[in-house]
Image 1 (cartoon, rainbow, N blue to C red):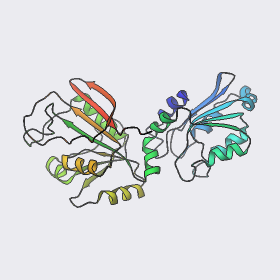
Image 2: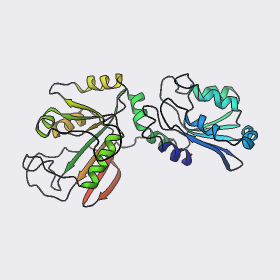
Image 3: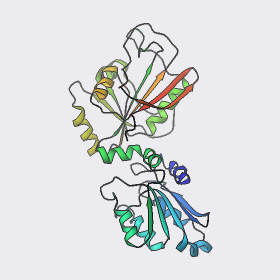
Length: 302
């Protein structure tokens, strides 16, 4: 399953809005086929894994196990159902990382395979498999985009220098920010930030598509905005400020991840950085030059 996750990562840029999925076929401890979902509209991971099996190994499928990081689809979309393909190939066992929350799948793929008499195990490295597609999972289970709040601050907790825009990020963290933009569907700033700073909000220091640009109006209802973005199949949203905009998302509980970059610079006065919600958990902390980037997530509840 860890190999499935490694393979799935290769589809991060081009599989969207489909999830990243990896598949590995094993017989007698040997991998005889593997694949991942390369591009939306093209073959899924299971299709590519079966296609990679050498002709002389086809006879081994009847006693092989296929590992898949996400439940095989059970519906006709741009491609035929992978659950049907697995049944047709006649493998002995299927191991699934996690269930697909998409309404047209959601257990149906697993049921179809089990009804064909094939042994199915579900939930292997489940948390890792769900985290890999956190944007897809949130979009379908919460009916809103996955929301990343992101800001940079001085060591004394200000996001600007005496209420004037100031450079906080360094070359490495700017590149990291643009990589994040390329990996997400939309980016949002508040009206004041949009008018004062005139941010381009595009991808200049990385390769990839520019995210949809959104400027939040003064009276915009956040829940209505989330519903509108969901209807437009926007699966992920980066919120880059300013402080009032960040506070409004935090107060509404509309966040999944918070990324805070802290520079050693001292401003002494200015706009205070938003206060982190209570009980946040640190998922990652890394240093780039003299700046530290910490990623916070909601605590895991049992």
